[in-house]
Image (cartoon, rainbow, N blue to C red; front, side, top):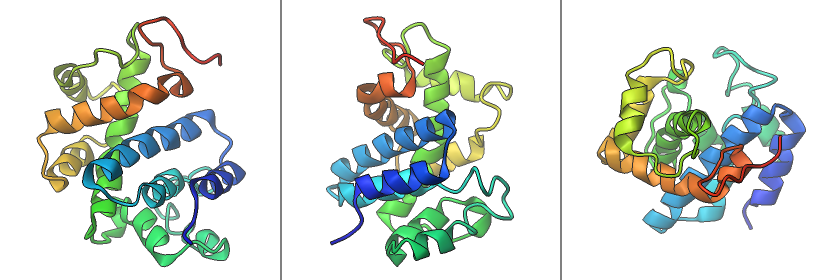
Length: 194
């Protein structure tokens, strides 16, 4: 039996304290899981990889260490090669081929999930009603969510063979059910207490 979502969450929270990083992991998990269902893939495995993709970021916050220095921790904790290689593949600087649907999807969901989340944080209705044109307009503003690599957003959609508008719609749809967990307001005014 493969690793479970619960075990991945334990690993993530053991190494990550930042609420922002935990919310990012949840956003990437939701988006990746949406695509797992869409592609009829192993949703549990995809959730595990998504939760773990930045698990070591607090202890290895630089490209010369993240995520490659986190891989031995995952080995020690007994995660299979498939999970570790997929986690490593999201890092552009490692140049690991994204040769599976899981690797392509993780890469495509990582930056865009963060960006859509950021868009929702500045809107009175969160991501409810968030349209691709609004997201693309914000993408053209370098000062907005400046840490998001725009080239990776575009490359991710292309890697999935999708128009950017469609990929944005899918990610927005994936994040809507967990909006309160992400600290986003909803049209009914609800948001998780900080």
